[in-house]
Image (cartoon, rainbow, N blue to C red):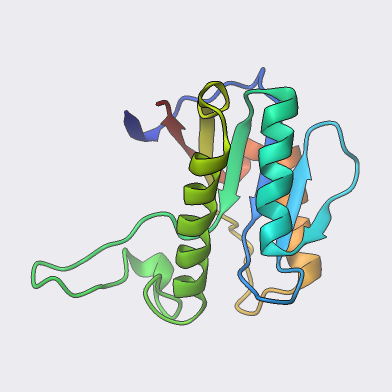
Length: 162
């Protein structure tokens, strides 16, 4: 069951905050979690394996993702922006497509690699209100760190349970 756009979150749970990137060679993902003081910049595959290991070792978390996680299609079936907030940077072209592909792959691999007890977590979509057009590694670290420190300022919640 997926509850969309819920205001439900569990502040008692530790947090994993990820600013997803998608690159074959670069460290494109910002990764932070409760209990650490430093945000890491990881390759995409390392980000997945770090998330899987943390969930297996420590159990339930709130998972905050900065990535395209929803889409919009017009009545004619063609993709379109979801609102004025996406003008000039829509989800279906440019970097939006890469983060959508990254999010789909990330969540698919999590589903495959996590044992059933670890699959229930609070999934939170981060919206960075200060995102500049050209992200860089320092920004990814900052976004992940900000999500960890002030999660309610950057997200809306989707609670996922299987």
